[in-house]
Image: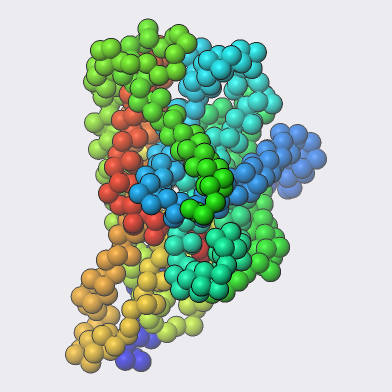
Amino acid sequence: MNTVISDKKTIFWLVAPGFILIAAMIFIPIMVSLYYSLTDWDGVTDYRFIGLSNFIEIVTKDAVFWKSLLNALLLGLGLVFVQHPLSVLTAMVVPYCGRFEKLLRASFFIPSIISTFVTTQLWVSVFNTQFGLLNRLLERLGLEAWKQDWLGDPKLAICCMIFVCIWQGFGYAFLLYYAGIKGVPKELYEAAMLDGATQAQVHGHIIFPLLAPVVRVNIILAVVAAFKQMETVYLMTGGGPADSTQFLSTYLYSKAFREGLYGYGNALSILLVLICLIMTVLLNRALQKDVGEY
Amino acid sequence: MRTRSLPRLLFVVLMTFLVLAELFPLVWLLNFSLLRSGDFFGSSILKWPNPPMWRNYADAFKGAHITLLFMNSLLVVFLSIGLIIACSIPMGYAFTRMRWKLRGVCFSFIMAGMIVPIYSTLLPNFILFKETGILNSYLSLILPYAAFAIPVSLFIITGFLETIPRALEEAAVMDGLGIPGMIVQIILPLLKPAIATVAVLAFLNCWNEFIMAVTYIDKDTLRTLPFAVVYFMGQYSSNYGAQFAVLAIIAIPSILMYLLFTDQITRGVTAGAVKG
Protein backbone atom coordinates (compact mmCIF):
# COMPACT_ATOMS: atom_id res chain seq x y z
CA MET A 1 0.00 0.00 0.00
CA ASN A 2 2.65 2.48 1.01
CA THR A 3 4.60 2.19 -2.22
CA VAL A 4 1.42 2.55 -4.24
CA ILE A 5 0.17 5.69 -2.48
CA SER A 6 3.47 7.50 -2.65
CA ASP A 7 4.34 6.68 -6.25
CA LYS A 8 5.68 9.97 -7.62
CA LYS A 9 4.87 9.31 -11.24
CA THR A 10 1.21 8.57 -10.53
CA ILE A 11 0.90 11.63 -8.32
CA PHE A 12 2.35 13.78 -11.06
CA TRP A 13 -0.15 12.57 -13.64
CA LEU A 14 -3.05 13.00 -11.26
CA VAL A 15 -2.21 16.54 -10.24
CA ALA A 16 -0.49 18.02 -13.30
CA PRO A 17 -3.46 18.65 -15.64
CA GLY A 18 -5.49 20.69 -13.19
CA PHE A 19 -2.44 22.37 -11.73
CA ILE A 20 -1.15 23.45 -15.13
CA LEU A 21 -4.59 24.69 -16.14
CA ILE A 22 -4.87 26.88 -13.05
CA ALA A 23 -1.33 28.16 -13.43
CA ALA A 24 -1.89 28.98 -17.11
CA MET A 25 -5.28 30.64 -16.73
CA ILE A 26 -4.91 32.42 -13.38
CA PHE A 27 -1.33 32.84 -12.17
CA ILE A 28 0.63 33.31 -15.39
CA PRO A 29 -1.88 35.96 -16.57
CA ILE A 30 -1.32 37.85 -13.33
CA MET A 31 2.43 37.78 -13.95
CA VAL A 32 1.82 39.02 -17.49
CA SER A 33 -0.43 41.71 -16.09
CA LEU A 34 2.29 42.76 -13.67
CA TYR A 35 4.73 43.04 -16.56
CA TYR A 36 2.44 45.26 -18.67
CA SER A 37 1.49 47.36 -15.65
CA LEU A 38 5.06 48.69 -15.72
CA THR A 39 4.72 49.88 -19.32
CA ASP A 40 2.83 52.54 -21.24
CA TRP A 41 1.55 50.08 -23.84
CA ASP A 42 -1.58 51.06 -25.79
CA GLY A 43 -2.22 47.48 -26.92
CA VAL A 44 -0.94 47.99 -30.46
CA THR A 45 2.26 49.96 -30.98
CA ASP A 46 5.68 49.82 -29.29
CA TYR A 47 5.88 50.45 -25.61
CA ARG A 48 8.46 51.43 -23.05
CA PHE A 49 9.00 50.63 -19.41
CA ILE A 50 7.93 53.41 -17.13
CA GLY A 51 8.48 51.71 -13.78
CA LEU A 52 5.86 52.43 -11.17
CA SER A 53 4.52 55.54 -12.93
CA ASN A 54 1.13 53.96 -13.63
CA PHE A 55 0.69 53.04 -10.00
CA ILE A 56 1.82 56.43 -8.79
CA GLU A 57 -0.54 58.18 -11.15
CA ILE A 58 -3.44 55.97 -10.09
CA VAL A 59 -2.93 56.56 -6.40
CA THR A 60 -2.08 60.25 -6.52
CA LYS A 61 -4.05 61.66 -9.45
CA ASP A 62 -6.83 59.31 -10.43
CA ALA A 63 -10.07 60.41 -8.76
CA VAL A 64 -12.07 57.68 -10.50
CA PHE A 65 -9.90 55.01 -8.85
CA TRP A 66 -10.75 56.36 -5.41
CA LYS A 67 -14.36 56.76 -6.44
CA SER A 68 -14.48 53.11 -7.45
CA LEU A 69 -13.06 52.05 -4.08
CA LEU A 70 -15.62 54.23 -2.31
CA ASN A 71 -18.38 52.59 -4.37
CA ALA A 72 -17.09 49.15 -3.42
CA LEU A 73 -17.06 50.20 0.22
CA LEU A 74 -20.65 51.49 -0.02
CA LEU A 75 -21.74 48.26 -1.65
CA GLY A 76 -19.91 46.27 1.02
CA LEU A 77 -21.71 48.26 3.75
CA GLY A 78 -25.02 47.69 1.98
CA LEU A 79 -24.41 43.95 1.88
CA VAL A 80 -23.19 43.68 5.47
CA PHE A 81 -25.76 45.96 7.09
CA VAL A 82 -28.84 45.42 4.93
CA GLN A 83 -28.61 42.19 2.98
CA HIS A 84 -27.08 39.96 5.63
CA PRO A 85 -29.15 40.94 8.69
CA LEU A 86 -32.27 40.53 6.56
CA SER A 87 -31.15 37.14 5.28
CA VAL A 88 -30.17 35.86 8.77
CA LEU A 89 -33.56 36.89 10.11
CA THR A 90 -35.35 35.30 7.16
CA ALA A 91 -33.33 32.11 7.44
CA MET A 92 -34.35 31.82 11.09
CA VAL A 93 -38.04 32.27 10.33
CA VAL A 94 -38.44 30.21 7.15
CA PRO A 95 -38.01 26.77 8.83
CA TYR A 96 -41.19 27.54 10.84
CA CYS A 97 -43.30 28.38 7.83
CA GLY A 98 -44.63 24.85 7.32
CA ARG A 99 -46.16 24.37 3.92
CA PHE A 100 -44.82 27.72 2.73
CA GLU A 101 -41.22 26.76 3.46
CA LYS A 102 -40.40 25.44 0.00
CA LEU A 103 -42.25 28.24 -1.72
CA LEU A 104 -40.39 30.89 0.28
CA ARG A 105 -37.05 29.24 -0.35
CA ALA A 106 -37.67 29.18 -4.09
CA SER A 107 -38.94 32.77 -4.18
CA PHE A 108 -35.80 34.02 -2.47
CA PHE A 109 -33.33 31.99 -4.45
CA ILE A 110 -34.69 32.21 -7.99
CA PRO A 111 -33.50 35.81 -8.58
CA SER A 112 -29.99 34.67 -7.61
CA ILE A 113 -29.95 31.84 -10.07
CA ILE A 114 -31.12 33.75 -13.14
CA SER A 115 -28.21 35.14 -15.14
CA THR A 116 -27.05 38.60 -14.14
CA PHE A 117 -27.61 39.57 -17.72
CA VAL A 118 -31.35 38.99 -17.40
CA THR A 119 -31.73 40.53 -13.97
CA THR A 120 -29.81 43.68 -14.88
CA GLN A 121 -31.80 44.23 -18.07
CA LEU A 122 -34.94 43.67 -16.04
CA TRP A 123 -33.92 46.33 -13.54
CA VAL A 124 -32.88 48.74 -16.27
CA SER A 125 -36.48 48.42 -17.45
CA VAL A 126 -37.87 48.82 -13.94
CA PHE A 127 -35.92 52.08 -13.61
CA ASN A 128 -36.87 53.24 -17.11
CA THR A 129 -38.39 56.71 -17.15
CA GLN A 130 -40.97 56.05 -19.86
CA PHE A 131 -42.50 52.69 -19.03
CA GLY A 132 -40.57 51.60 -15.94
CA LEU A 133 -42.27 49.82 -13.09
CA LEU A 134 -40.87 52.09 -10.39
CA ASN A 135 -42.11 55.40 -11.71
CA ARG A 136 -45.44 53.84 -12.51
CA LEU A 137 -45.74 52.48 -8.99
CA LEU A 138 -44.99 55.92 -7.54
CA GLU A 139 -47.59 57.44 -9.83
CA ARG A 140 -50.15 54.92 -8.64
CA LEU A 141 -49.38 55.65 -5.02
CA GLY A 142 -49.89 59.34 -5.68
CA LEU A 143 -46.22 60.13 -5.22
CA GLU A 144 -45.80 61.81 -8.61
CA ALA A 145 -43.23 64.16 -7.17
CA TRP A 146 -40.91 61.25 -6.37
CA LYS A 147 -40.63 60.15 -10.01
CA GLN A 148 -37.00 60.23 -11.11
CA ASP A 149 -34.59 59.49 -13.88
CA TRP A 150 -33.20 56.75 -11.65
CA LEU A 151 -30.15 55.67 -13.62
CA GLY A 152 -29.50 59.08 -15.15
CA ASP A 153 -28.69 60.87 -11.91
CA PRO A 154 -25.18 60.05 -10.60
CA LYS A 155 -26.24 60.04 -6.92
CA LEU A 156 -29.31 57.88 -7.52
CA ALA A 157 -27.57 55.53 -9.95
CA ILE A 158 -25.14 54.21 -7.34
CA CYS A 159 -28.02 53.67 -4.88
CA CYS A 160 -29.97 51.78 -7.55
CA MET A 161 -26.89 49.71 -8.29
CA ILE A 162 -26.41 48.76 -4.65
CA PHE A 163 -30.10 47.96 -4.35
CA VAL A 164 -29.97 45.60 -7.35
CA CYS A 165 -26.90 43.85 -5.92
CA ILE A 166 -28.67 43.38 -2.59
CA TRP A 167 -31.77 42.11 -4.36
CA GLN A 168 -29.86 39.68 -6.51
CA GLY A 169 -27.55 38.28 -3.85
CA PHE A 170 -30.23 38.01 -1.16
CA GLY A 171 -31.08 34.45 -2.16
CA TYR A 172 -27.46 33.28 -1.92
CA ALA A 173 -26.98 34.82 1.49
CA PHE A 174 -30.30 33.44 2.67
CA LEU A 175 -29.44 29.94 1.45
CA LEU A 176 -26.10 29.90 3.27
CA TYR A 177 -27.67 30.82 6.61
CA TYR A 178 -30.65 28.57 6.01
CA ALA A 179 -28.39 25.56 5.38
CA GLY A 180 -26.40 26.49 8.50
CA ILE A 181 -29.55 26.55 10.64
CA LYS A 182 -30.83 23.30 9.17
CA GLY A 183 -27.49 21.77 10.13
CA VAL A 184 -27.96 22.55 13.84
CA PRO A 185 -28.70 19.24 15.62
CA LYS A 186 -32.35 18.87 16.66
CA GLU A 187 -31.44 17.71 20.18
CA LEU A 188 -30.05 21.15 20.92
CA TYR A 189 -33.43 22.83 20.40
CA GLU A 190 -35.29 20.17 22.28
CA ALA A 191 -32.99 20.28 25.27
CA ALA A 192 -33.34 24.05 25.44
CA MET A 193 -37.10 23.99 25.08
CA LEU A 194 -37.36 21.40 27.87
CA ASP A 195 -35.35 23.70 30.08
CA GLY A 196 -38.06 26.26 29.52
CA ALA A 197 -36.35 28.57 27.05
CA THR A 198 -38.56 30.66 24.75
CA GLN A 199 -38.26 30.63 20.97
CA ALA A 200 -36.52 33.96 21.07
CA GLN A 201 -34.04 32.70 23.66
CA VAL A 202 -33.30 29.57 21.65
CA HIS A 203 -32.55 31.72 18.63
CA GLY A 204 -30.57 34.32 20.47
CA HIS A 205 -28.53 32.02 22.69
CA ILE A 206 -28.18 28.83 20.64
CA ILE A 207 -28.76 29.27 16.95
CA PHE A 208 -27.14 32.64 16.49
CA PRO A 209 -23.87 31.74 18.25
CA LEU A 210 -23.71 28.54 16.22
CA LEU A 211 -24.21 30.59 13.07
CA ALA A 212 -21.31 32.87 13.95
CA PRO A 213 -18.70 31.07 11.83
CA VAL A 214 -21.07 31.11 8.87
CA VAL A 215 -21.69 34.81 9.41
CA ARG A 216 -17.95 35.42 9.52
CA VAL A 217 -17.29 33.65 6.24
CA ASN A 218 -20.24 35.33 4.58
CA ILE A 219 -19.20 38.79 5.63
CA ILE A 220 -15.74 38.20 4.20
CA LEU A 221 -17.24 36.87 0.99
CA ALA A 222 -19.66 39.79 0.75
CA VAL A 223 -17.00 42.45 1.22
CA VAL A 224 -14.59 40.79 -1.20
CA ALA A 225 -17.45 40.35 -3.68
CA ALA A 226 -18.17 44.08 -3.39
CA PHE A 227 -14.61 44.85 -4.42
CA LYS A 228 -14.78 42.32 -7.26
CA GLN A 229 -18.11 43.60 -8.54
CA MET A 230 -18.27 43.85 -12.31
CA GLU A 231 -21.08 42.17 -14.21
CA THR A 232 -24.01 44.02 -12.67
CA VAL A 233 -22.32 47.37 -13.16
CA TYR A 234 -21.09 46.62 -16.66
CA LEU A 235 -24.55 45.54 -17.79
CA MET A 236 -26.60 48.14 -15.94
CA THR A 237 -24.78 51.43 -16.32
CA GLY A 238 -21.36 50.62 -17.77
CA GLY A 239 -19.93 52.69 -14.89
CA GLY A 240 -21.82 55.87 -15.76
CA PRO A 241 -23.28 58.38 -15.61
CA ALA A 242 -20.02 60.33 -15.34
CA ASP A 243 -18.13 57.45 -13.67
CA SER A 244 -20.51 57.62 -10.71
CA THR A 245 -21.10 53.85 -10.59
CA GLN A 246 -17.58 52.84 -11.57
CA PHE A 247 -16.03 49.84 -9.79
CA LEU A 248 -12.41 48.82 -10.07
CA SER A 249 -13.06 46.00 -12.53
CA THR A 250 -15.31 48.02 -14.83
CA TYR A 251 -12.85 50.87 -14.67
CA LEU A 252 -9.84 48.76 -15.65
CA TYR A 253 -11.89 47.26 -18.46
CA SER A 254 -12.87 50.60 -19.94
CA LYS A 255 -9.35 52.02 -19.53
CA ALA A 256 -7.85 49.11 -21.48
CA PHE A 257 -10.49 48.37 -24.09
CA ARG A 258 -12.22 51.75 -24.62
CA GLU A 259 -9.39 54.20 -24.04
CA GLY A 260 -6.58 51.92 -25.24
CA LEU A 261 -4.55 52.50 -22.07
CA TYR A 262 -3.52 48.89 -21.75
CA GLY A 263 -0.59 49.37 -19.38
CA TYR A 264 -2.66 51.60 -17.12
CA GLY A 265 -5.52 49.07 -17.15
CA ASN A 266 -3.13 46.33 -16.09
CA ALA A 267 -1.87 48.44 -13.22
CA LEU A 268 -5.49 48.78 -12.05
CA SER A 269 -5.85 45.03 -12.51
CA ILE A 270 -2.88 44.34 -10.24
CA LEU A 271 -4.30 46.71 -7.64
CA LEU A 272 -7.59 44.79 -7.80
CA VAL A 273 -5.78 41.53 -6.99
CA LEU A 274 -3.86 43.18 -4.17
CA ILE A 275 -6.95 44.78 -2.66
CA CYS A 276 -8.86 41.48 -2.74
CA LEU A 277 -5.94 39.71 -1.08
CA ILE A 278 -5.56 42.36 1.59
CA MET A 279 -9.29 42.48 2.29
CA THR A 280 -9.43 38.70 2.69
CA VAL A 281 -6.50 38.61 5.10
CA LEU A 282 -7.64 41.65 7.10
CA LEU A 283 -11.23 40.50 7.45
CA ASN A 284 -10.12 37.00 8.37
CA ARG A 285 -8.01 38.47 11.15
CA ALA A 286 -10.59 40.97 12.33
CA LEU A 287 -13.40 38.44 12.54
CA GLN A 288 -11.34 35.57 13.88
CA LYS A 289 -12.56 35.86 17.45
CA ASP A 290 -16.15 35.09 16.41
CA VAL A 291 -15.34 31.51 15.59
CA GLY A 292 -17.42 29.03 17.54
CA GLU A 293 -17.59 25.27 17.61
CA TYR A 294 -20.50 22.88 17.86
CA MET B 1 -44.27 31.13 16.79
CA ARG B 2 -47.83 30.32 17.80
CA THR B 3 -47.52 31.66 21.31
CA ARG B 4 -47.55 35.39 20.69
CA SER B 5 -49.43 36.82 17.75
CA LEU B 6 -47.81 40.22 17.33
CA PRO B 7 -44.33 38.99 16.38
CA ARG B 8 -45.98 36.36 14.24
CA LEU B 9 -47.96 38.97 12.33
CA LEU B 10 -44.79 40.99 11.94
CA PHE B 11 -42.96 38.05 10.43
CA VAL B 12 -45.82 37.31 8.05
CA VAL B 13 -45.73 40.90 6.85
CA LEU B 14 -41.94 40.81 6.48
CA MET B 15 -41.99 37.52 4.54
CA THR B 16 -44.76 38.70 2.24
CA PHE B 17 -42.90 41.91 1.59
CA LEU B 18 -39.66 40.05 0.80
CA VAL B 19 -41.36 37.56 -1.50
CA LEU B 20 -43.02 40.41 -3.37
CA ALA B 21 -39.77 42.35 -3.59
CA GLU B 22 -37.88 39.34 -4.91
CA LEU B 23 -40.50 37.99 -7.31
CA PHE B 24 -42.61 40.90 -8.47
CA PRO B 25 -40.06 42.22 -10.99
CA LEU B 26 -39.99 38.74 -12.56
CA VAL B 27 -43.78 38.60 -12.76
CA TRP B 28 -43.70 42.03 -14.34
CA LEU B 29 -41.15 40.76 -16.87
CA LEU B 30 -43.33 37.80 -17.84
CA ASN B 31 -46.38 40.01 -18.07
CA PHE B 32 -44.71 42.54 -20.36
CA SER B 33 -43.21 39.81 -22.54
CA LEU B 34 -46.77 39.01 -23.59
CA LEU B 35 -47.86 42.57 -24.36
CA ARG B 36 -47.97 44.50 -27.60
CA SER B 37 -45.39 47.24 -27.68
CA GLY B 38 -48.16 49.81 -27.79
CA ASP B 39 -49.53 48.50 -24.49
CA PHE B 40 -46.38 49.40 -22.63
CA PHE B 41 -47.26 52.98 -21.93
CA GLY B 42 -50.01 53.93 -19.56
CA SER B 43 -50.46 53.90 -15.85
CA SER B 44 -51.48 50.35 -14.97
CA ILE B 45 -48.86 48.21 -13.28
CA LEU B 46 -49.80 44.80 -14.61
CA LYS B 47 -51.88 44.48 -17.73
CA TRP B 48 -53.98 41.55 -18.83
CA PRO B 49 -52.43 40.54 -22.17
CA ASN B 50 -55.33 40.68 -24.62
CA PRO B 51 -54.62 38.67 -26.65
CA PRO B 52 -51.28 37.33 -25.27
CA MET B 53 -48.60 38.09 -27.84
CA TRP B 54 -46.90 34.72 -28.19
CA ARG B 55 -45.46 36.19 -31.37
CA ASN B 56 -42.99 38.09 -29.19
CA TYR B 57 -41.44 34.78 -28.26
CA ALA B 58 -41.33 33.63 -31.87
CA ASP B 59 -39.72 36.94 -32.89
CA ALA B 60 -37.22 36.74 -30.06
CA PHE B 61 -36.29 33.21 -30.96
CA LYS B 62 -35.52 34.14 -34.54
CA GLY B 63 -34.16 37.64 -34.13
CA ALA B 64 -31.77 36.86 -31.30
CA HIS B 65 -30.56 33.61 -32.90
CA ILE B 66 -31.53 31.77 -29.74
CA THR B 67 -31.05 28.29 -31.19
CA LEU B 68 -27.46 28.94 -32.25
CA LEU B 69 -26.52 30.73 -29.03
CA PHE B 70 -28.20 28.06 -26.96
CA MET B 71 -26.27 25.26 -28.67
CA ASN B 72 -23.01 27.18 -28.29
CA SER B 73 -23.65 27.73 -24.59
CA LEU B 74 -24.56 24.09 -24.12
CA LEU B 75 -21.37 22.94 -25.85
CA VAL B 76 -19.08 25.30 -23.97
CA VAL B 77 -20.69 24.57 -20.62
CA PHE B 78 -20.66 20.79 -21.00
CA LEU B 79 -17.07 20.68 -22.19
CA SER B 80 -16.10 22.93 -19.27
CA ILE B 81 -17.89 20.69 -16.78
CA GLY B 82 -16.17 17.65 -18.31
CA LEU B 83 -12.77 19.30 -17.95
CA ILE B 84 -13.51 20.43 -14.39
CA ILE B 85 -14.47 16.93 -13.32
CA ALA B 86 -11.63 15.27 -15.22
CA CYS B 87 -9.13 17.53 -13.45
CA SER B 88 -10.57 17.72 -9.95
CA ILE B 89 -11.25 14.05 -9.25
CA PRO B 90 -7.67 12.82 -9.83
CA MET B 91 -6.40 15.86 -7.92
CA GLY B 92 -8.80 15.25 -5.09
CA TYR B 93 -7.58 11.69 -4.88
CA ALA B 94 -3.92 12.69 -4.83
CA PHE B 95 -4.58 15.31 -2.15
CA THR B 96 -6.61 13.13 0.22
CA ARG B 97 -5.21 9.64 -0.29
CA MET B 98 -1.63 9.85 -1.43
CA ARG B 99 1.51 10.86 0.41
CA TRP B 100 3.88 13.40 -1.10
CA LYS B 101 6.04 16.23 0.09
CA LEU B 102 4.61 19.17 -1.86
CA ARG B 103 1.02 18.33 -1.05
CA GLY B 104 0.37 21.21 1.32
CA VAL B 105 2.07 23.78 -0.88
CA CYS B 106 0.19 22.63 -3.98
CA PHE B 107 -3.13 22.70 -2.19
CA SER B 108 -2.68 26.24 -0.88
CA PHE B 109 -1.59 27.36 -4.33
CA ILE B 110 -4.79 26.04 -5.88
CA MET B 111 -6.98 27.43 -3.10
CA ALA B 112 -5.34 30.82 -3.61
CA GLY B 113 -6.99 30.69 -7.03
CA MET B 114 -10.29 31.32 -5.26
CA ILE B 115 -9.25 34.73 -3.98
CA VAL B 116 -8.10 36.00 -7.38
CA PRO B 117 -10.91 37.95 -9.04
CA ILE B 118 -11.80 36.62 -12.50
CA TYR B 119 -11.78 40.17 -13.83
CA SER B 120 -8.12 40.73 -13.09
CA THR B 121 -7.23 38.11 -15.69
CA LEU B 122 -9.35 39.66 -18.45
CA LEU B 123 -6.66 41.94 -19.88
CA PRO B 124 -3.66 39.58 -19.77
CA ASN B 125 -5.70 36.61 -20.99
CA PHE B 126 -6.97 38.66 -23.90
CA ILE B 127 -3.36 39.23 -24.99
CA LEU B 128 -2.23 35.66 -24.21
CA PHE B 129 -5.17 34.22 -26.14
CA LYS B 130 -4.48 36.52 -29.06
CA GLU B 131 -0.79 35.48 -29.13
CA THR B 132 -1.60 31.78 -28.96
CA GLY B 133 -4.42 32.04 -31.48
CA ILE B 134 -7.18 30.71 -29.26
CA LEU B 135 -9.01 34.03 -29.10
CA ASN B 136 -12.35 33.54 -30.86
CA SER B 137 -12.62 29.84 -30.22
CA TYR B 138 -14.59 27.77 -27.74
CA LEU B 139 -11.29 27.02 -26.03
CA SER B 140 -10.91 30.65 -24.96
CA LEU B 141 -14.00 30.20 -22.77
CA ILE B 142 -13.65 26.56 -21.74
CA LEU B 143 -10.12 26.91 -20.35
CA PRO B 144 -10.74 29.88 -18.04
CA TYR B 145 -14.19 28.61 -17.01
CA ALA B 146 -12.63 25.31 -15.98
CA ALA B 147 -9.62 26.91 -14.28
CA PHE B 148 -11.75 29.21 -12.13
CA ALA B 149 -14.11 26.40 -11.15
CA ILE B 150 -11.44 23.85 -10.19
CA PRO B 151 -10.52 25.29 -6.75
CA VAL B 152 -14.12 25.17 -5.46
CA SER B 153 -14.70 21.79 -7.11
CA LEU B 154 -11.54 20.38 -5.58
CA PHE B 155 -12.66 21.72 -2.22
CA ILE B 156 -16.01 19.94 -2.50
CA ILE B 157 -14.44 16.70 -3.74
CA THR B 158 -11.69 16.50 -1.11
CA GLY B 159 -14.27 17.23 1.58
CA PHE B 160 -16.37 14.35 0.33
CA LEU B 161 -13.42 11.96 -0.10
CA GLU B 162 -12.42 12.49 3.54
CA THR B 163 -15.70 10.85 4.56
CA ILE B 164 -15.09 7.69 2.50
CA PRO B 165 -13.35 4.89 4.46
CA ARG B 166 -10.08 3.60 3.04
CA ALA B 167 -10.65 -0.10 3.66
CA LEU B 168 -12.14 -0.70 0.23
CA GLU B 169 -9.12 0.76 -1.49
CA GLU B 170 -6.68 -1.25 0.57
CA ALA B 171 -8.48 -4.44 -0.41
CA ALA B 172 -8.37 -3.35 -4.05
CA VAL B 173 -4.63 -2.71 -3.90
CA MET B 174 -4.14 -6.19 -2.39
CA ASP B 175 -6.02 -7.54 -5.38
CA GLY B 176 -3.50 -5.83 -7.63
CA LEU B 177 -5.57 -2.89 -8.85
CA GLY B 178 -3.47 0.19 -9.76
CA ILE B 179 -4.35 3.78 -8.77
CA PRO B 180 -6.02 4.74 -12.08
CA GLY B 181 -8.10 1.57 -12.05
CA MET B 182 -9.05 2.20 -8.47
CA ILE B 183 -10.17 5.77 -9.16
CA VAL B 184 -12.37 4.64 -12.02
CA GLN B 185 -13.79 1.50 -10.46
CA ILE B 186 -14.07 2.33 -6.78
CA ILE B 187 -13.83 6.07 -6.17
CA LEU B 188 -15.88 7.32 -9.10
CA PRO B 189 -19.09 5.47 -8.20
CA LEU B 190 -18.79 6.59 -4.58
CA LEU B 191 -18.22 10.20 -5.59
CA LYS B 192 -21.47 10.53 -7.54
CA PRO B 193 -23.21 12.97 -5.14
CA ALA B 194 -20.12 15.20 -5.00
CA ILE B 195 -19.83 15.13 -8.79
CA ALA B 196 -23.48 16.14 -9.13
CA THR B 197 -22.87 19.10 -6.81
CA VAL B 198 -19.76 20.16 -8.69
CA ALA B 199 -21.50 19.81 -12.06
CA VAL B 200 -24.56 21.82 -11.07
CA LEU B 201 -22.49 24.58 -9.52
CA ALA B 202 -20.25 24.74 -12.60
CA PHE B 203 -23.28 24.72 -14.86
CA LEU B 204 -24.80 27.75 -13.17
CA ASN B 205 -21.57 29.73 -13.15
CA CYS B 206 -20.60 29.00 -16.75
CA TRP B 207 -24.11 29.25 -18.16
CA ASN B 208 -24.55 32.74 -16.76
CA GLU B 209 -21.04 34.03 -17.43
CA PHE B 210 -21.05 37.14 -19.53
CA ILE B 211 -17.90 39.26 -19.40
CA MET B 212 -15.42 36.65 -20.68
CA ALA B 213 -17.88 35.56 -23.35
CA VAL B 214 -18.05 39.15 -24.58
CA THR B 215 -14.32 39.82 -24.28
CA TYR B 216 -12.82 36.68 -25.81
CA ILE B 217 -15.34 35.98 -28.57
CA ASP B 218 -16.38 38.34 -31.31
CA LYS B 219 -17.41 35.91 -34.00
CA ASP B 220 -21.20 35.72 -34.38
CA THR B 221 -21.25 31.97 -34.92
CA LEU B 222 -19.47 31.25 -31.61
CA ARG B 223 -21.51 33.53 -29.31
CA THR B 224 -23.04 32.15 -26.15
CA LEU B 225 -26.55 32.72 -24.83
CA PRO B 226 -26.09 35.85 -22.71
CA PHE B 227 -24.99 37.61 -25.88
CA ALA B 228 -28.60 37.70 -27.05
CA VAL B 229 -28.66 41.08 -25.27
CA VAL B 230 -26.70 42.71 -28.03
CA TYR B 231 -28.94 41.29 -30.73
CA PHE B 232 -32.11 42.43 -29.12
CA MET B 233 -30.77 45.85 -28.29
CA GLY B 234 -29.83 46.39 -31.89
CA GLN B 235 -32.80 44.84 -33.55
CA TYR B 236 -35.65 45.46 -31.17
CA SER B 237 -34.85 48.86 -29.81
CA SER B 238 -38.56 49.68 -29.94
CA ASN B 239 -40.09 46.22 -29.73
CA TYR B 240 -40.15 45.99 -25.95
CA GLY B 241 -42.37 42.93 -25.96
CA ALA B 242 -39.75 40.91 -27.86
CA GLN B 243 -36.98 42.27 -25.60
CA PHE B 244 -38.80 40.98 -22.56
CA ALA B 245 -39.44 37.69 -24.33
CA VAL B 246 -35.68 37.26 -24.93
CA LEU B 247 -35.06 37.83 -21.23
CA ALA B 248 -37.75 35.33 -20.27
CA ILE B 249 -36.34 32.73 -22.67
CA ILE B 250 -32.88 33.08 -21.14
CA ALA B 251 -34.20 32.96 -17.57
CA ILE B 252 -36.28 29.81 -18.02
CA PRO B 253 -33.45 27.20 -18.20
CA SER B 254 -31.96 28.55 -14.96
CA ILE B 255 -35.31 28.34 -13.18
CA LEU B 256 -35.79 24.78 -14.45
CA MET B 257 -32.31 23.91 -13.18
CA TYR B 258 -33.26 25.23 -9.77
CA LEU B 259 -36.50 23.26 -9.62
CA LEU B 260 -34.78 20.05 -10.74
CA PHE B 261 -31.63 20.28 -8.65
CA THR B 262 -32.57 22.25 -5.53
CA ASP B 263 -30.67 19.88 -3.22
CA GLN B 264 -27.46 19.78 -5.26
CA ILE B 265 -27.55 23.56 -5.59
CA THR B 266 -27.99 24.01 -1.85
CA ARG B 267 -25.12 21.66 -1.17
CA GLY B 268 -22.92 23.27 -3.81
CA VAL B 269 -23.55 26.83 -2.68
CA THR B 270 -22.96 26.03 0.97
CA ALA B 271 -19.87 23.89 0.34
CA GLY B 272 -18.47 26.59 -1.93
CA ALA B 273 -18.86 29.19 0.77
CA VAL B 274 -17.42 27.43 3.80
CA LYS B 275 -13.95 27.61 2.28
CA GLY B 276 -13.20 30.81 4.28
